[in-house]
Amino acid sequence: MNRTLYLISCAAPPARHVATGIRAAQSAGWDVCLVLTPSAYRWAEEDGENEVDALRKLTGHPVRYRYKLPSQSDVLPDPDALLVAPATLNTLTKWADGHADTLALGLVTEGLGLPLPIVALPYLNNAQAQHPALSRAVSTLRKAGVTVLLDDGTPEGRGFRPHRPKQGDVTAYPWELALDALPSGS
Image 1 (cartoon, one colour):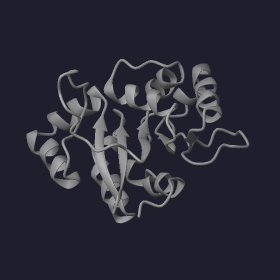
Image 2 (image 1 turned 30 degrees about the vertical axis):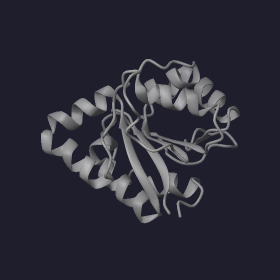
Image 3 (image 1 turned 45 degrees about the vertical axis):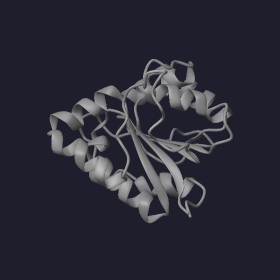
């Protein structure tokens, strides 16, 4: 039986190629449930209604992006792990500060208190990486047990290396690195 991975994608260019990450996770034995930030969902919608539907068909689950009403049942199975990819500066800093104003943030802030492996694979440019809130957020999340895959010059720093503004290569986004940091999905 496959274990369930919540893939939480933020509005960064690799989110437009999230199907690549989904397929890689499925190949590793995960049942993938996709949760998008509201902005990432809007991007998928603007790519055409068929994009959201294609992602639903690929995962076999509804694509979630907002909180359900208290009277509504959960439509996704409980997660065995959380992967935030791509993780943006906005999400990392809000997550570290305990904000839960979107479903994506609510899941990851709550996830810190659950016995779940959590991996974050950022996508940042090197100007964003210089923001003073980033190092504090990454340190906070790492201390809370999150594997933050960011090559930030710290001893724990390995993973995504920020690129020059407007010079990112989404085809080189290391989905496999994030999946390798999770426990086996099968």
